[in-house]
Length: 199
Image 1 (cartoon, rainbow, N blue to C red):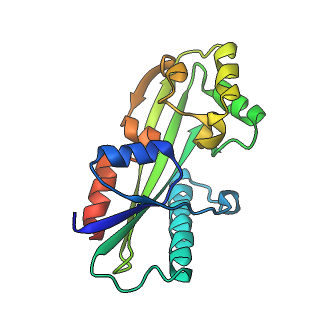
Image 2 (cartoon, one colour):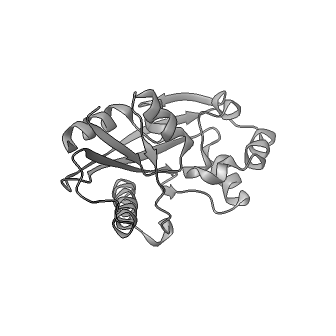
């Protein structure tokens, strides 16, 4: 690999997916106030958030003097995911009560997962981004399962409180239209294409 990758994300799922793609990478998190960025359309929101995360990380790298001339190309990958349910955009739940409401809303219904990926070439400044959408259809989810999911607290760290890799929720998924990796937060085919385009 003739380039380095920085994954600008704290997401365990994104780390796993990028590792599965065969890449080695270092990690940085953006630590931005995501709720200060608002857009009406979910596709616009996830792109704006991925850009804001990239900008924050680049600013931190500059202030540390880590963007000095390098012979090797360095790519920064940032991403964001939201869930759309009943016409409402769902980000990370702000409380256990909100997580419970979100998951209850998916029971016997469906939700769309909209995720963005942005690849920034730190050497040339070239930026390539895109988004993908997947639909998830659910069977009825019993209240006791919802309670257990909410108590696990992982629901507070993921868009819409929804983590399909959790075996508890997986058995109540009727169908996924789109790719599982898009639902998990890093669509592999899109990410690979953007990496190639940014080089």
